[in-house]
Length: 89
Image (tube, rainbow, N blue to C red; front, side, top):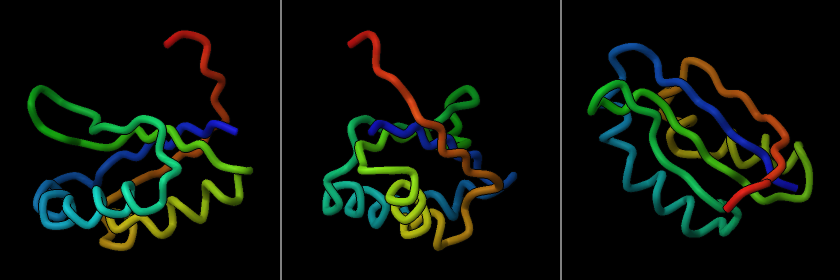
């Protein structure tokens, strides 16, 4: 099952993002369930994340989201997990 994780950073939290970026990228690599990922942008500034997870169910996506180093660091103002269907690409 594909799940789109859409997370928006708390205002003024860029340093939190930068401080935890290497742990976040390592988590993506070690868990092996991320199909695609990248930051949401406002101009050149990173303001959130879009992550496409390939997991068994919504509970697995929630567990992944809860254990993301960005989430543990308190980076996000909001996180949405939405089932997603790949049509193109």
